[in-house]
Amino acid sequence: MLFELREVGLDRGGRAVLDSVSASIPAGSTAIVGPSGAGKSTLLRLLNRLADPDRGHIYYRGQPLVSCEPLALRREVSLVPQLPALLEGTVESNLRYAAELAGEPLDCAETLSRAGLDPSFAERDVAKLSVGEQQRAMLARALAQRPAVLLLDEPTSALDHAARDKIEAALGELRREADLSIVLVTHDPEQARRLGDQVLRLP
Amino acid sequence: MSTSIHVELWQVAASLVLVALAIAISFWQRADLERDIAVATARSIIQLTLVGYAIKLIFEADTIWLVLALLAVMVFFGAITARHRAAKVPGSFGPLLIALALAGASTLGLVVALGIFDPTPRYLVPVGGMVIGNAMTASAVALNRLGDEMADARVRIEATLALGATPREAAAPTVRRSLRSGMIALVDSTKTTGLIFFPGTMVGMLLAGASPTDAVRLQLILLYTLLGSVSISALVATLLAYRNFFTPAAQLRELEEPPA
Image 1 (cartoon, rainbow over the protein chains, first blue to last red):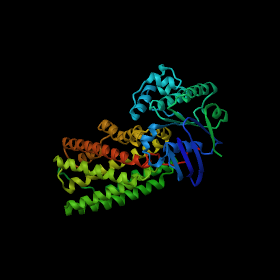
Image 2 (image 1 turned 45 degrees about the vertical axis):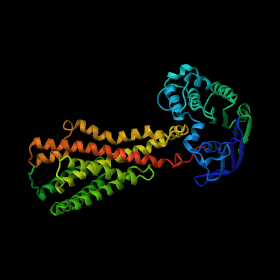
Image 3 (image 1 turned 180 degrees about the vertical axis):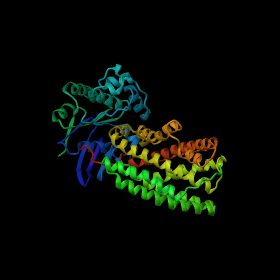
Image 4 (image 1 turned 90 degrees about the vertical axis):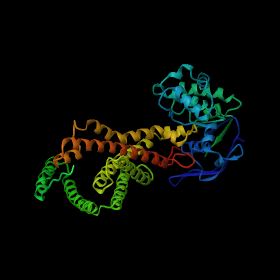
C-alpha cells in the first residue's frame, strides 16, 4: 500500500478540517473527491508533510510518515499546489532548481514534453505564461525531481476547457508510467473518473 | 575637539516659539496633531533632561561598567520599541534583542579596537546611542517588511518547500528583500549627506566651535560606523526571525486559515 490513513484528524482555528479519516491509497492513480471544505487539499498536504495531523496516523509504504525526514520525503512525494507559484526566471531555471534539490540530472526537453509543454518553453519567462501554461510548468517542475508519487491539488480548477484538456492529456500519459503514482484532488467527479484508477470520497 | 558651548535656559525657552508655530499650523489645517506635538515636546524635555543628568553622572563616574549598563538598557528598550513595528513576525523580540546587542557590541568594539575612539564614557555613550538607535530603526524596518512579505509570498514559499527545499532556501528571496529594505534608508542618506542635509554631529560640532575639518572627519567616522551597525542588525534580525515562520519539520506555521 502506498499510503495508509488511520483515524486522521486535523483542526484549524478550533474547527476540525479533517475528522477520523481512514483510507488506503494504493500505487497507481487515485482521485480524491468531495465537496468544497471537505479537507481535500489539507489531506494532500499531510501526505508530503507540509502539515502533520493532530490525531491519528499516516503510513507511507508501511513506514510511519512522522518518522520520514520531511525534505527527503518531499523530493520523493512531490506536490503541485492548486495555484501556480513558480520562482522568478525562466521555465528551465525553475526545472533546474527542482532537479538540483532532488540531486537528479535534468533533461529539460523530455521533462517539458512529459508535462505536455513544447521544449521551446524552456527559455520562456514564467511571468509571461498563461495560467494554464504556468500550471503545466509547475507539473514539469515536479517531474524534474523524478518523484515516485505526484500529488496534484485541483490541477485544472483555475483553467478553461482547452487548458484543462491539455493538462488532462498530459496526466493521462503520466498514468501509464509504471514507476509513478498519482494522487489527485478534484471537486469534479467526472474528472475523478477520467483520471483515477480508484476514487476516494471525502464526506 | 575640546571645545565647549554654553546654552542658557532662556534660549531653549525661546525656541519653543517654533513648537507653537507647529501647533498653530496643525490647528489651522485641522491636522489633528496639536495634542501629539504637545506630548512630544513635553516628553523631549523630560527624557532629554533625565538622560542629560544620567550622562553627566556617567561621565563623572568614568567607569566602563556604567556605560555598558546604559548601553544594555538602550538595547533592551530598542528591542521593545522595534517589536511593535514587527507585529506580523512571531516571536520577534529575541531576534531584535540579539540583533541590537550584536550590532552595538561589534561596531563599538571595532572602533575601539582600531583606536578610532578611546574606550571612555565621553565617546562610547553618544556613539553607542547613535549606533543602537540606527540599528533599531533598520531592524524594525527589515522585520516589518519580512512580516508583510512572508504573508504575501506564502503560496510561493510553500510551493518551494513542497519541492524539498529547506526553509532557508524557500525564504531566501523574502529575506533578501527584507534585509535590503532595512539597509536602504541609511545607504541613501549617506549618498546625499552634505548635499541635501547636514548630519547632526557635524552641525553640533560646528556650532560648538570645532574646525570644519574635524567636524567632517568625525562625521565620516560616524556614518561608516552606522553603516556597519545597520547592516549587522538588519542581517541578524532577519536571519533569526524568518525561522519563526517555520516548524522544526520545515512546515510553514499556520498564521491564518488554510484553504480547505
